Length: 140
Image (cartoon, rainbow, N blue to C red):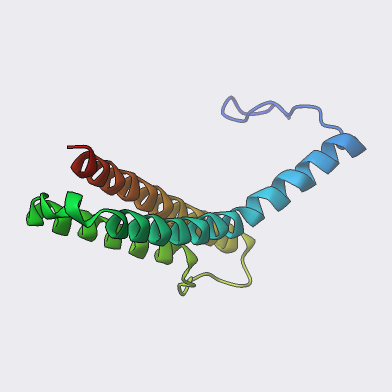
């Protein structure tokens, strides 16, 4: 019986070597640990944000007296949103998946990583933007 033209040809396969299997296991474990690493980074960022905010706002009151009040409110708002975004990374959200489906669990894991990664990027970006504005206020 001839194979239909739409059927892809079968490729010869072999079982993975012990080294290849070890790398596959490592990659899977590394992928599964990604949310934990993102959460640790977010905890570090939240602490760093609070410390630098306190240092910069408490260090030189004269520099802030000459600053535009709207600018300072904007910076405080950016800082607050960056903290909230960092907390979104750490906060356990309800994740919807089918426990009897590996594909559903993998898809949920990808959604979690994507959400946490984007929130961490947003958090760091807003923090750096706010820090840049506040540095500009001090150097003016």
